[in-house]
Image (cartoon, rainbow over all chains, first blue to last red; front, side):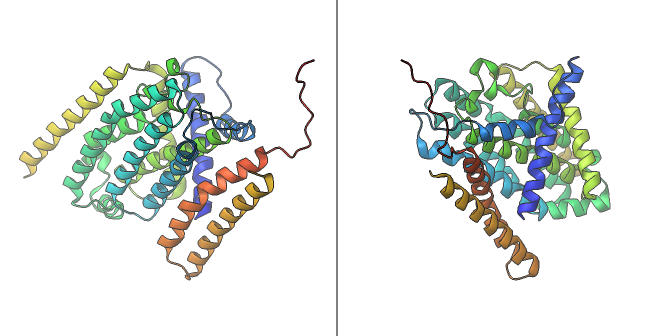
Length: 281
Length: 67
């Protein structure tokens, strides 16, 4: 089991490096090498580590453990074909982690990040509606049954394209340097992560690498199907590169615009569900 | 935390996770149980191994603290 986690962490960090490289190339910069985020994580793990005096020590340290644990659990959930609702629950737990991380330090920058994390709770709405659309077609919330459905009926990417777009937006909301990355905006230094440095930041980098791997894997699994590992990784990479393009050409939105766009997508998807219900009964 | 303690905890977490994985592969432990063990042990493995190699060994130079 631990080998899956180490593999996912490595690939996730590599994906983060590729993400930065693609953004840089689109913007006409050379960019860092693709293994930069692996080095970055190792660098943090060697840096001097302590807990700020104003921090709640238990929450400050515990949140790093929880962040790694929930995405480890999410990976196993995908591997065993568990319920998509549990994946949704992990996503919600991650929101609590983001919030708790910001509040645990006592720093005003991280607190602003934590508050923005709550504001951007609208990013969960497209995911919830995606779950409804998937159930509408497959009559199941089990990932194993959803992939089995796709083997017979073709990929949900084609059958339920609007749901795939909504899920894509959900992943985009969690990407670094994206238009919705308001919780780690530079006007807040590093947002809710500002005070987590050294080993704590290295732990968070591991958690975020797992998160990126899990979300991309979930997208491929839910909307394209269960494929050989090499093909899954190539498709994940393609999705990632497309996300990087979006991040490269889109400025970071204001918190208000972030919520507006995510709510509009949710509204459009609800209209889609109503149309489906009327047309398909 | 002492450097040695961090190493022991980190290694213990890694060994426990690897052992659970092996037992699950051999059929002595349900896969779900092995996954739960990995979910709990992996964060401890990552953090404590990093704390171990981060910790000072006590042989550093005395920093300059002014005249």
